[in-house]
Image (cartoon, rainbow, N blue to C red):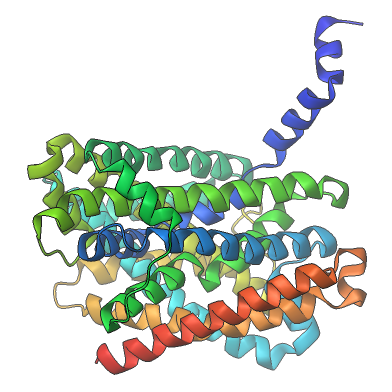
Length: 419
C-alpha cells in the first residue's frame, strides 16, 4: 500500500477531506448576510451604543445555527429546495404570492448591494458610473458563464476578505477587558433607540433569502444523507464566522467613532470616520470589506431569488445548466442585476426609501417562512427519520418565536418611526 493510500485511510484525514469537499453552502450563506445593509447596521450599533450590544451576538448566533441547520437538513433529506417543498405541500397559489413578495424584497436588497459597491469605491476615488457597471458585468458573467464548482470557489474566496474587518477591529485598539465584559455580561437599556437597534441586529442577521439559498445550494451540490454531519459542520462553521465578523465591525466602530462622539449614518461614513483614530489603512480595509461584501451579496441575492422562483413555479434551475436549458432561471438572474445596478446609477432614484422597504419586507416575510419550515421539517412523510426531535423542536419553536417577536417589533418600529 502506498504512503498516500495509508494517509487517506486515516479516519481524521478522511473526514477532513470529506468536509473540504462538502463545505461551501453553509459558510457562504451565513457570511454573505454581512452585506452592505448588515455592515451598516453593525457600524451604527458600535458607533451609537459602543460595546453595549455585543452580548446580543451570542444568542443571535445560536438562533442562526438553529434556523440554518433545519434548512440544510431538509435539503439532504428531500433533495428539494424550500420553494419546491412549499409548492408541493401548500399549493401553487400560496407559493406564487410568497415568491412575488420575495422577488420584490430581494430586488430592493440587490439595489442596496450595488449602492454598497458605489459607496465603497468612491472612498478610493472611483466613480459609481464605472464601479457599478463593472461589478454588475462581473457577477453576471460569473454565474451565467461559470459552473457551480467555479462559482462556489469564488464565493468561498470572497469570504476570506472579511478578515479585513478583524484587522480593522484590532487596529482600532479597543479596551479588550471592557469588550470581554460587555460581551459576556448582558446589559439592557429601556430606551427606544436601543431596542430598535437590538431588533435591527436580529433582522439583519437572519433574512428570508438565506433559507431559500442555503437549501437550494445544498441540493445542487448533491450531498448524500449519510454525509449530513459534514453539511451540519459547514453550517455551524458559517454561523459562527459571520457573527465574529460582525463582532469586530461593532468593536472597530465602538472604539473609535463612539469614543469620539462622532455621528455616522452609513457604512461609508464609518469607514471614513475610522481614519483619524486608526489610520488611513483601517479606512481602506473597512472600505475593501464593504466592497467585497456588497459585490458578494449582489451575486448571491439574485441567484437565491432565481432559485426560489424557478423551484416554486416548477421551472428548471441550476448554475450548471445552459441558458437555453433554464431560460427563466438565467433570465431572472440577469433582470435583477440589470435593474439593481441601473437603479443605483439613476441620479434621482429614492434609494433610502427602497432600503427601508427591503428591511420591512424582510421582517414581514421571515415569520411566514419560518412557520412553513417548521411545519415541513416535522412532517414525517417528507422528512422521514430527519424530523426534529422533541428537544430540538422545543429549541426551534422558542427560537423561531423570539425571532418572530423581534422581527415584528422591527417592522412596527419601521412603520411608526420610518415614515
